[in-house]
Image 1 (cartoon, one colour):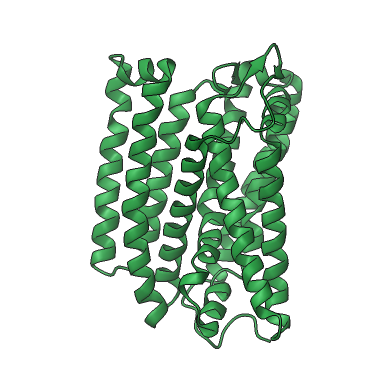
Image 2: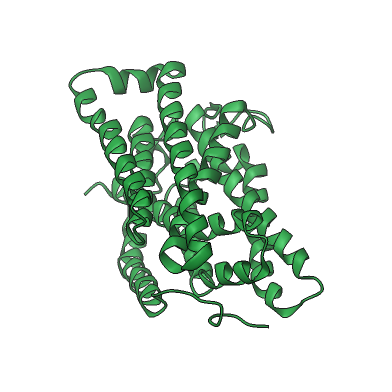
Length: 333
């Protein structure tokens, strides 16, 4: 068995689960300025209050798994991305504290609203910048990072950061469509439509840019017969985008969120196949970065028990707190 490949798939699942689940509550916070009414903000926070902290379990699993299973990649990526990683963690701390303190005060409520918004913006933007930095390539000499402190900061990474922010807005608005009603829901339809169009254009722009600047990616996407399979992804992206916009136009409630996840999944799959089999393009492969096989086997035994438990717990939580949120439910002063 190829244990390194199995672990790469598990970490990819953890990363996508984090984006899919924590993305919508980050997006709801980013949408806060568009909902200045305090009663609307209370409902928005209550829409994610039962699940937001559990969503971040997947971030811990992905980051911890990378350290344990692919230590070489971790030792290269972390120095290259110290600043955005630190900003992301500080953002998540600020928004977590704001979540708990906002309902405990009236005079300083605006302070925690600002913390919630800024922390979520910082976390989302940092995640997009890290994605962009990995896609554009990281300087490696031998087995060490050899770039500068600000190599992660380029126009491309900033663009990717903004694209992730827009994507999270789409997930957040889609979640509010599913979990709320009335004015919040109607305004969320409008924001979701705008975010969906911008996100599709952003994904298309990145997909065009990468083959232009990276010869390896260009060969992968434009060399037959592999290109025949890869080019099915843009077709699927177009189909999902049309499905999403139609569901929003018809004012459907549950499907916009599922279609939005479809957009993220196709983009995630497309970027993954563009850099496969590298964890650090184009310097360190999955097998170069992997820990010894005995370690991979030992950790896989633990993951075989842990990951199903996390899935079960997460699914049970969402099932228990299913349904609509109104002004009389959730946290109160």
